[in-house]
Amino acid sequence: MANPNIVNVTVINGTTAYLLPASTAVSVAWTYADPSTSGSVSLTGLTPASGTVNKINNIVVSNTTASAVNCSVAISNNPTYASGTPYFIASTISIPAYASLIVTDKTTAFYVTQFQSVGVISGTASALTFVASFEAITS
Image (tube, rainbow, N blue to C red; front, top):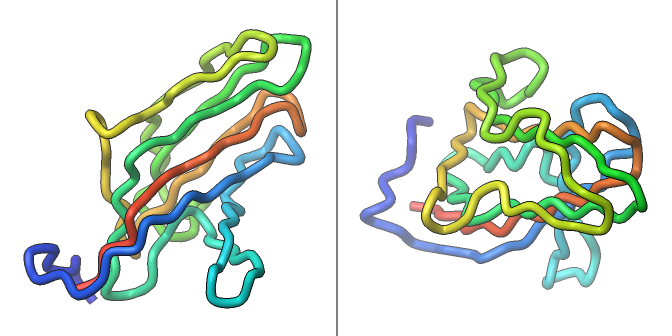
């Protein structure tokens, strides 16, 4: 399906997803709470289902260690991140110890369609927490 018409919206669900990379490889395994089951849902690459577009309102990265750690965030032109070309929103930015970085916020929001994905890279395994707030818009 092509991009949904966001003028004729039927549902907008606000969601916050999080990711803690366990390695220094690209991570795309975002997770969020499912209020209907009290469980958690995996959302690979923040890629929405067909007929939905995700408006990414913000991405915040927090360093939970006593050392500076590099981070990168990119959007890929493929729902399988590694099969596409990454376009970096933030590239190799050093986050000081116990500090946070706002990678993107409402003033620089962007859309992720079913044909795209968002991946992150942590310079040190299990050192950074990525949090994304987004609206899943369905027409």
